Amino acid sequence: MTTLLPKPEHKFTFGLWTVGSVGRDPFGSAVRDPKTPAELVYLLGEVGAYGVNFHDNDLIPIDATPAEEEAIKKDFRKALADTGLVVPMATTNLFGDPIFKDGAFTSNDPKVRAYALQKTMRAIDLGVEFGAKVYVFWGGREGTETDSSKSAVDAIKRNREAMNFFCEYAIDHQYDLKFALEAKPNEPRGDIYNPTTGHMLAFIETLDHPEMVGVNPEVAHEHMAGINFMHGVAQAWEAGKLFHIDLNDQYPGRYDQDLRFGSRDIKAAFYLVKFLEDVGYDAPRHFDAHAFRTEDYEGVKDFARGCMRTYLMLKEKAQLFNADPDIQAILTEINAEDPAIAPLFGKYSAEKANAIKAITFDRSSISNRGLKYERLDQLTIDLILGYR
Image (cartoon, rainbow, N blue to C red; front, side):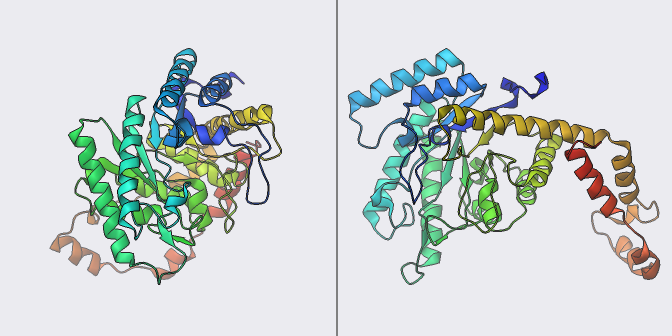
């Protein structure tokens, strides 16, 4: 179906680290030869992506010489121009190098904290150079294996100090940039600070410039903790803090799998897509996932196409849900207002309080009413599986 072909307005993006994954895991070495950043841009152009995102060292190796850096950027810039891809988001790798073995901004070593500031400032400059409007912070090493080693309060303060520093840095350089914080409960650390989107939202309100900082929730990270991802996304949206989103899939209770979007929990993926489309989310839909280790680069293309195709199929299903007469009839019934009670909600007044206190509720009648949720849920399953 032509409607399932990705278009620029869908704003589908991938990280260099996603399609560029060589398939290495803790038990096995690489199964695909590495590609240059420019080659990966051409690959994404071939499958119809809108944009490409990068960690600083996905693009520029950490030990690259100035001449090597310029050559890489020249090739990357040409690939962007040739394909029409854009760079909506960038981030910093503060987890891969051994210097970050005990964290970056929360490290006990002041030299490590200072190096993390230096590396991030340079990476922010690099992201802005290529047009990034959102800058993501994932604290992959900001945690502990033993709480004997660090004060959790000091870690919070150090994180806050770093984020305040970068906000001022962006203001000082007049960068048109928003920051998005990405939560994860564990891995690679035993426990990571600010482990969920809710934690991040609370942390943001303690910053000097909370208006500049939002969140980048990731499906897999919240599912690792057994959390309903869509609910966290809804909280971020309602707070005006959903600056970016990472789409993938995950089995709860396992290591971070970064599965193809919608490949594990299609029902959860449906509710997420429906939410994003219903509220009019218009920022990039970024796929932070990896192809199976079994694949060559043709399989990587299949993976990337699959992420986008599944999103578009679920978008169509969401439209069908909103137009289905049986589903909408149940929703209308179960959400019906009581005209006698409706005026009593909203802002408090003494009159409303007294009126509510005076009502005699027929608890038995109310509780005996069937809500038809079983039928509604099955109608949703029928729709997702193509039987409506």
